[in-house]
Every structure is written in structure tokens, then in C-alpha cells.
Amino acid sequence: MKAGGPARRVAILGSTGSIGRQALEVVEALAGRARVVALAARRDAAALAEQAVRWQPEAVALTDPEGVEEFRQMASGWRGELLVGPQALEEVARWPSADVVLVAVVGVAGLLPSLAAIEAGKELALANKETLVAAGELVRERAASCGARIVPVDGEHSAIYQCLQAEQRRDRVSRIVLTASGGPFLRRSLESMESATPEEALQHPTWRMGPKITVDSATLMNKALEVIEARWLFDLPAERIEVLIHPQSVVHGMVEFVDGSSLAHLSRPDMRLFIQYALTGMDRLPPGFGRLDWTVPQTLTFEPPDLRRFPCLGYAYEALAVGGTLPAVLNAANEVAVQRFLDGEVPFGRIPKLVRAAMDLHEPRPRPTLEEILEADRWARALVRSL
Image (cartoon, rainbow, N blue to C red; front, side, top):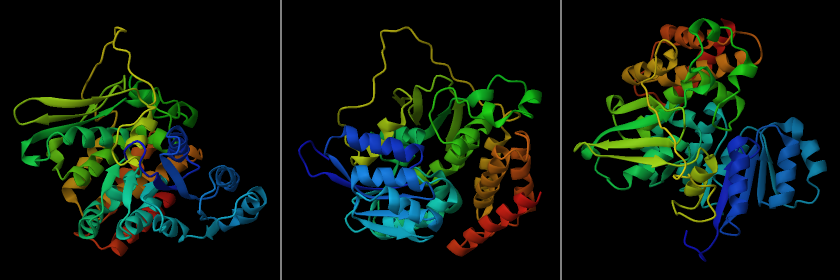
């Protein structure tokens, strides 16, 4: 999107969440170079109504019908089309006037609308890890057959994506490195981690995120899901995808080439930078969101992750090795385990144990269909709720 060109028309799924709100900040900062044409949320009718009045999109979707009356009362100054119900996300993902669809909903709920956007020929700005974790092979095949482009929004994947623009040939890539801050429990004793509270787990040292993703960062499941996602985004085997702990969160990703040279993406830890890159069609435009000050002395450190502290990372490599429906089970089990932790039903240390139990009890199906993936997801959720 060049300066002075037509505004990019954006549909945002998950507009009331952390990524969605930051995406609207980006649209505002772009000052007319992007335009909101559709918004969607699950149940926060009040926030969605406020956004509808402010941005005047052509369509708004609310998947929870219970919020419709509240929305109508608060959005009296808006004149667009209201879509309601479970299929509403998919309708927004196909919205005819949208150039780019940002899928920022949490969990496997992002899978069907991501597929809908791909099949409608939209550019998919993907901020939902679970879509590629649960159905990476299937999504990749659909995107190839439809000629759709998937642009990652997650900081680490966006960093790798940008570094790879310098070298398109995968046979020249030795490995990619995803960085992780280590979360709030990086130096905490293993024993005390077991009984950590939700309040403690939500104190992320560098990033501003929603509660589910923040807890995933504390268990390093966030990085585990990113490893699986990276396998499908970049068409690289698991053995060429590595993770390093980098507490400063300045280096977001690195690509090492077969000649021993490396490229790295460095910036302030601000998701708006990566959202802007995706929404503008991979253009680099002002205003930006702050710069690193290289005149200030600083130290950047890296260390391998401790799998005793973060067993979920090892589960990701196991799920990739087995394949089939096992990654979907890992993801679904984690979603339920994290919610049970946030609800005070299980201690923090129980999260990886519940995921492990679901993986051990599951019989994976190879090359699954979409329905088999969704059935494995339902099975894992029911199991972890019952344990």
C-alpha cells in the first residue's frame, strides 16, 4: 500500500480483544490509508457497539445472541448490517468489500473463519495460532488451491516472515529461531510454580496480551503452539525450528542460513508494529510505534529453554512428529486447562499434566478431514473438563 494509494479495506474478527483493539489503533494511526469495513466479537456487546459507532463499518457480527439488545441500544448511531450467531464470524470473513481479514479471535474458533477468508480469496492476516496448530496441513492446502496469501501477525512469525523476504529458497535456510521472554516464572523455583495464582501468571514482563495467551506464555505453551504454526507457515520440518529464551524481547526472530550467516528482526515489543505490517500489505509506513534507542547501553541475552520448567514445549515437537489429529488435541486440551486455571478450578502446575493426559489417551488419525479435526477438538475438551 503506497502513500496516496487507495485505502486498504479491513475486516477484524475479535475486535474487542487485545489484538483487535490494537489493530484499531493502527488503523487510526494510518490516517485514512486503511478503512474498517467489518468488525466481529463473541460477546462484548458494549465494546462492539462503541466500536461500531466510532468506525461505522458496513457490517458487525456478534456470535452470542444474548448481547443483541444491548448492542442495538448502545449502537443507535450506526446504520450497518448486524450479523448474529455462530456463523457470523464466517460471514464477516467473506465480507465482499474486505481486502484483508484479520483473524484475532482466541482459540480454535478462528479455524472456520480463517478457512472462509481463504476460500473467498481474501488476504488472511493471521493472529490466531490455533488455526494452523489444529489444521495446518489442511489450511496450507486450501490456501494453495485458492491462491490466498497468509501473512502472520504474531511478532515472532512476522519477524521470521520478514527475514525470509531476503531469501526465498528454503534449501538455503539452516534453521529459524523463535524467541520467548520466558514469562513471569522464568527464575521462579519449580516447586513454587506448581501453586502459582492466576494473578501471578498474568503479570507478563514485556507484552500486553489477553489472559489466555498470557497464561500460555507462563507455561511456554504459547511458544509450543508457535513451533507448530511455524512448521506450516514456512514449510520447514520441526528439526529446523528452534526456541531460545530472550528475556529482553528485542530480537523477535532469527533466520540462520546454510553459510552460517543470520538475519534477525529487532524492535520494541509492540504488537502494533507487526499488525501494521500485515494490514498494509507488508508495506513500511509511518508513523510506526517507537524506535529502539541504540545510544543507550543494553545487554541482549539468549539461553535454551528448560523443558523441566516448560514441558509444554516438548509436547509440541512430539505432536508434530506424530501428526494427524494430535496437534488439535494438544491445543484443545490446553484451552480448557487454561480456562479451568483462570476459573480457580485447578492449580497452575496442573495445566501441562492435563494436556499430557489428553495426548496420552488420544488415538491420532493420520491426514484428518476437517470434521475429524473438529471431532478430536471436541473429544479433548470433554476429556479435560472431566478430569
